[in-house]
Length: 65
Length: 182
Image (cartoon, rainbow over all chains, first blue to last red; front, side, top):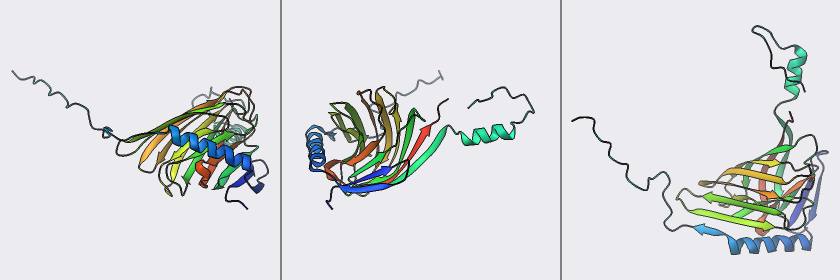
């Protein structure tokens, strides 16, 4: 059995069929993986801290004279 | 199912009505599948009983970091799976991607190896001749993600697969529910 295991579960009968993925299936998955690695975007610089306002809150005007 | 909405004060539902309500919840449990493979295909997962489905992924994980649990509607052809996601970590770092693929939606991002992701996903109109769409939100690692996509084949799909990017083994529990038609 290949490390690339495919399990088919029949939702109606509950039966499962286990098999090795075909070479075509593996090739398609590797192509998708390569495309993902080329196109993924990871933005880490100047990332805003969560829940931290970008500007200080304005000081409310006092009602007192 | 006929739903009464005109009960008067003091009037009680009949036993028959109560049984009808009990047998027809808005969200109907269908099945549970334990995931432990690179590819898990749920055949006969969609049928005409429900138009829309809810998927609950619990403790979804992989031994590979920064990978995806791809989703594939079985029988898809052409460049028909369009999708995107955005993940934000607790530091504010953002990971995002979009894809037009023959076979896969980007599915669920799994940022950290061996750490469970909890995900709530809806799939709309998989078994009717319309575009099939999905959306999800998930808590993953030390952050959260959301995303979605469309399949433009207008095909009545009967099943779907969960596939680990890079050939990663995807583990976890999947529960499938159907939204009751009104």
